[in-house]
Image 1 (cartoon, one colour):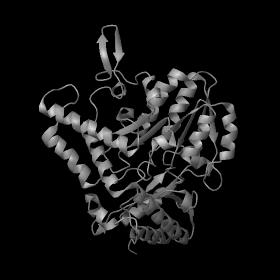
Image 2 (tube, rainbow, N blue to C red):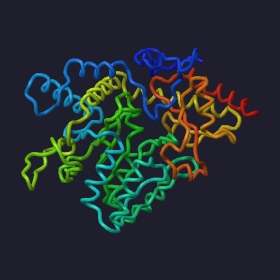
Image 3 (cartoon, rainbow, N blue to C red):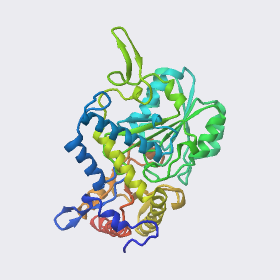
Length: 414
């Protein structure tokens, strides 16, 4: 079956991704269904980074020669593009980090250690990625904090009634993912944040899965902190973003010490630089920032609302096809409540075996706990197989996945 959609010209989009032309085995073309782990990169991003290294490569901010000034301009232009993409009021609110994980750790180490004390409550959810669990667990152990969790109900949605009750504990912070990397659940971020603020808490959004797939407006959400990674949204690895409200960032101590995060240094003291440089110690990922800017251009030109609509189409179709396969159990809610993620089990076949056999057919999926062990334990599972889709995925690839799962069953004598 070919992709038929009013949202995107998928075949045209695929032409921009060189890796999608690859055969992973002789005569076996790649079917890439692992975009939740990392997306593939369009030629526009690859060429932007190549141009930087070929013609502009220099350190930024401190040099006054031509290359340094050009590099600085491109680096800061990327920051501006990202600020516009998420509708931040100012590019000074966009802090470059290595990834979502580092962004959340930055908040935990800087804001958390500066503001939280023994007995303070942090509310998380049962569906969180380890990146939004472990930093708070570490801080809780150090500061004797109390962690509470919004449960996941049988449909794979957050139990907001329990959340209302937890807010009576007067939490200092509510930290949650906008979209689950396992269930695909799209959480009602604006409602969760509004309720947190009514209870006097700040709200941190793990947007690693949502920023690549949904239109984002941090001001409309009223998010206090918002974290995401370039590599999941057509950009390079090794760079991410922490957005924060200006007044919060200005009152947070530096996370790392070194060059560029200082205004003045003496032998026994220092004064911090202004935003955003206060949190960007040392030589940053310059080429990666430029590549991130190119990825933002790419996604913006296509249009995030179109990407969102298309992914609704493809996940709806994927759920239909997967449910046809005997023995398949898909975790998570109905298509109207989820993004392009389908984590599933197949009878008694281990997900690693499923993944290994699918690889013979050129199909790349993820198998494991997807850095969400507590969520898998809730479902009584050690692992799941996960197929995930993006703007370059096709309905024909969904068909290939379903057909290959029948072959997996045959191999195991089912």
